[in-house]
Length: 359
Image (tube, rainbow, N blue to C red; front, side, top):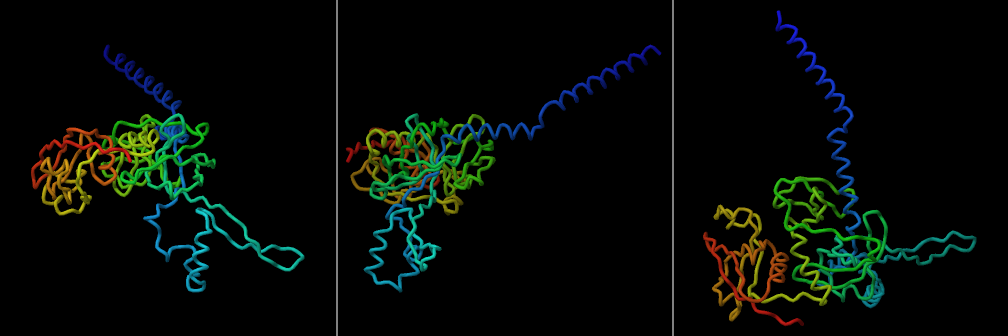
């Protein structure tokens, strides 16, 4: 009899506490609303440092003639006229004929439209408005033209070409720094399984996603926890911004990248490469295959052989040409450790890299 009231009182207290907790929870935003608020804050935090730029296509990589805007007229105009039209057409400008409605006889007049077609995303790396773009173009391609730029808020501005490096496939430009602000890089790629924001060339395709080692996204990868820039994801490869920053600084300070010499010709090791199937632990690890070793080079003196797979140079893993070029440029001349896979054994090789004088 004495236990019953105690039990009822405890039950009433439990119910009261539960009701109080529910009322407090109802005052809190839902997890989805909290995620939305955090995503908005993240986007606004990084948007001032992200650019969409229209770079001229490098002349070596020009489109085939059949894809050009003058292709439909190739069999109707003489070669001399076609050549003059090609030479007189500025980059990024299209000419159309507009019918003018007036009391006078109908005539046509040329009207010029500048068409903005961004083909690369970049990130601002310092307070002076210098920006890193993961695409190569040369000074000759740019000429004396300013480069059209769109900011994330839709504002149009222009950038000045600073320099570029073909081997690592990067270009550095400068934008008016009162319109942008620099973003911090991370020290490496995002952790496997972490939540990231991927900003795409098409702003409407920007999205949150779960990061995997070879995430097949195209765009700028941003760490969701603090808004730091992880790097650029392209064609199944990932370049960290931290790897590219030393190259960008060399371009800003010296106008070019000075990298030491190893002395090998290399090729990618794609995901379907037979060696990845035969050597189980190789799996999807980044790797570069040595195709040729130049005589009397640091590579030949260190005993590197055609067929060796380079897994890392210094402390950087390498998985494609651009990443390898960035790792070489980040290294200094002198002894440098390489991790290589020879047949089915991982071995360490010390290579004495040669300094190359700036050109």
